[in-house]
Length: 101
Ligand SMILES: [Zn+2]
Image 1 (cartoon, protein in one colour):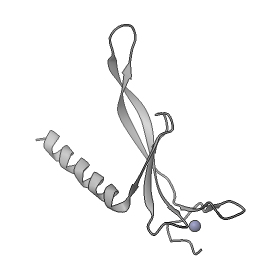
Image 2 (image 1 turned 180 degrees about the vertical axis):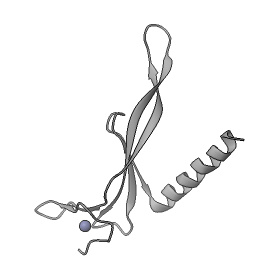
Image 3 (image 1 turned 180 degrees about the horizontal axis):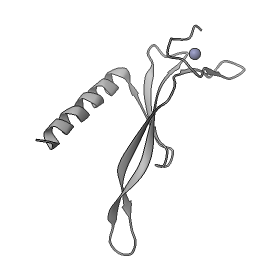
């Protein structure tokens, strides 16, 4: 399978069942709000974290996916279609315009 131009770290198993095109990682330093329970009351603390954004496409996929993973947040990953990523990016920009009015 020919690699797309963005493929930097091509990954495949010996049987090629798991063959992925994976882009470079875009690292985004972020400050996030995390719950913390010192005693009886939950408080929320600002914490530094990093989001890693990559493009990934399995050999059986018609289109690539955008994957966003937080380094410190328990290994969770959000994988979405290009259209969804576009919608999310536009929504975040709208919320920023609203909150700064
Ligand atoms: Zn590739």
